[in-house]
Length: 110
Image 1: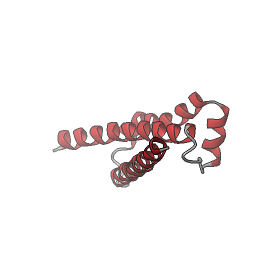
Image 2: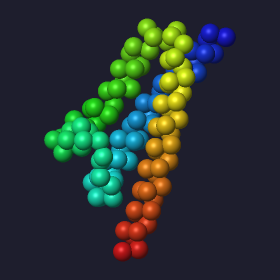
Image 3: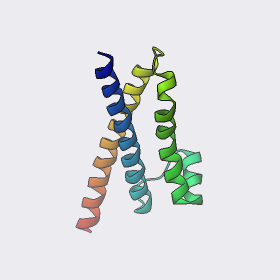
């Protein structure tokens, strides 16, 4: 049972990293094409400073979580929080995909 749980957690962490990457890419595209504005002032200032810094910040957090996960995994709150974060990032990615589709359709119709 523990092996199955570990496999699920590993997939969840990889899914989180993937969703963070796609969130960063979708946001970058939206900012670059002026479809959206970054509402987080810290992320906005990092993006305005340097785009590679923006990607670094957006991707380092899930990587840190992956690194510390073996030490915190047995705490009762970790799994529910990890699942919630993946669900939220999934919803954010769906939202990004929708506005990106509408934005590109609007640009194509000119």
